[in-house]
Amino acid sequence: MRIAIFPGSFDPFTVGHADIVNRSLSLFDKVVIGIGKNSLKQSIFPVENRLQHIRKVFKDEPRVAVEIYTGLTVDFAREQNAQFILRGIRCVADFEYERNMAEANKQLAGVETIILYTRPEYAHISSTLVRDLYQHGQDITPYLA
Image 1: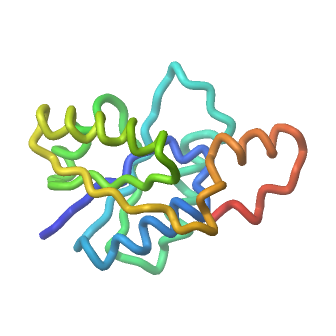
Image 2: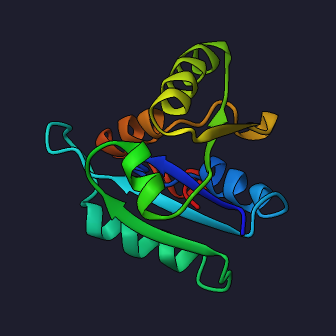
Image 3: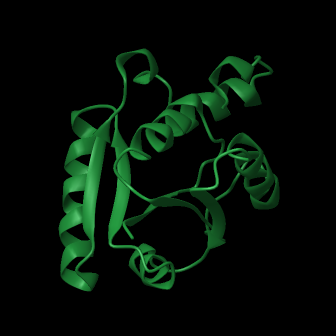
């Protein structure tokens, strides 16, 4: 069984994130969305709310699971018996970061990273942008999955 984890803070989970997961289902038998819990990072939306929201988004897709994890992503991959880490990239800066992480994860655990490019219509959407809009009282529903 080909299992991939899709790790991130998903604060919040955007239409771009959902698109990456949906497109990846043609590549993997199961995708586990891993919501990384980092006590040092200030979140806007509580992690339990994110968990419930993402589970609701994929309630009709049995090949998608959603879990909260702490610690290293490669350890979470091992716990899930995942052979792959799924990542989406929007721009060149994302690529540089993801390439370095992919090499480290491969050396640490032998886990391959699979990168899907964000569709052009979602390339401008980031969780950071959505959080900023939210904090300034703007409607963020068009950006949420």
